[in-house]
Length: 257
Image 1 (cartoon, one colour):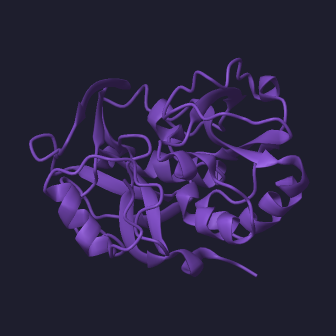
Image 2: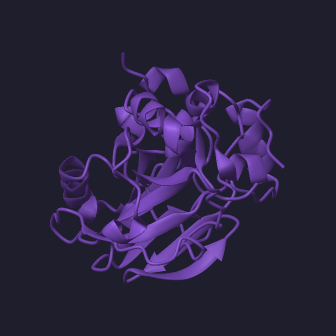
């Protein structure tokens, strides 16, 4: 069940109290973000990785070492997301409701743009958003396209997929292209095999959604990408895919004309 009526603070309080849900459709008009928290000694490499891969890794905010909040996220990064994934040596070792015990004083939190931010604009333009209609998580896929490496960070591009009626693909591209800080225009529309994706019914993250006759699968760069680029990092914390940080920033703050 989505709650578009809630403010970011009220949504964060619900997550802190134990609500566990994908956040697509929550807090209408407010920006959502991906979380990756890394040891400070890797922060410079990650900033460079983000600079080299701006489509999947648009940095919206960064915390101080050990800080549990940022300028745009005045809640508690350890408790106020609806789900977390903990990594050791690049491997996921736990999905958890909070990371109070796991948080470290040397962690630097990065908040990256999320494509949920432009979904309301898509719907206003008449472009359907299937996972919101169905009340499920957006499907996300590992591609065969490598990101540009930087220091210890290297891995494939991850994309999210939304089915779009063929006649509205150009509209979807134009609308989302106005939001470059939250992944911007699609990276591909059409045959998923061109991205190395074999089966749309088996996403690597999130839930499958149907592609109806007359629709085209359209793919946007995804902020889960860093979670596949941390193989050489001894410890990291990310959001559970689709379970985002809700910021005290408006979607339209990131729209360009």
